Length: 74
Image (cartoon, rainbow, N blue to C red; front, side, top):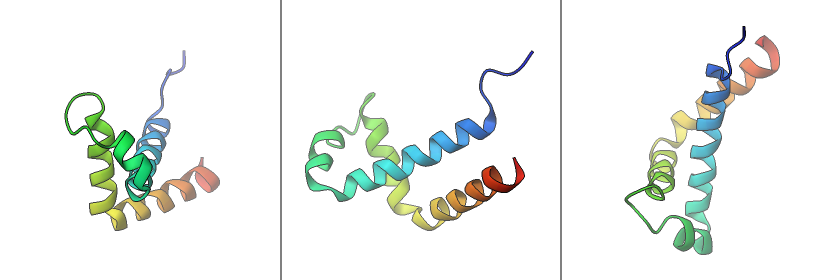
């Protein structure tokens, strides 16, 4: 029996989500449309964007390490 979700997939999804939301924060139209709410379900996008912009070096390093792992090790 195999696992339905793998830790690799969850980490990749989290990194891509944070990077995408940080990009949305840089685009003015998307910023007002998607990142205007700071609470509730839509607040997750805002919080991910804040994480992506404040920890941009750590997120970039994590993306590079995850890409290397997926391409060469897995």
